[in-house]
Image 1: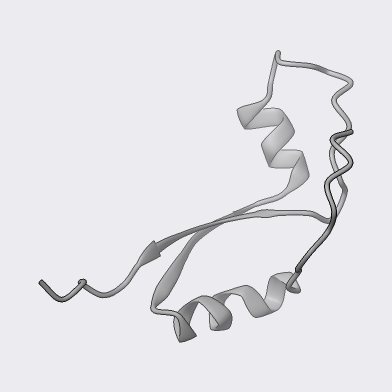
Image 2: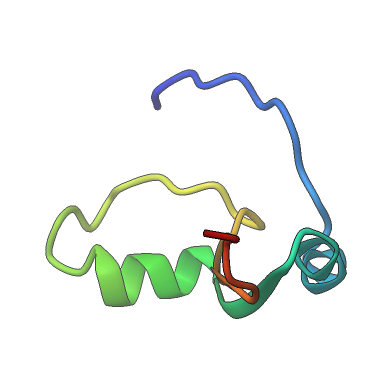
Length: 66
């Protein structure tokens, strides 16, 4: 739709370990089904979303030095 170039990806089962190495913790993985039903409901029923693409929600697990 937006003709975005795919630059980088990571398998869903590798996300938590990747985030831990960068001092983040996984909060939630949002699939295209959840995105469409929970966050885009009523926006556009025929909105094309990439199947298999997910959004990862993470939070920092360490404090920044002051």
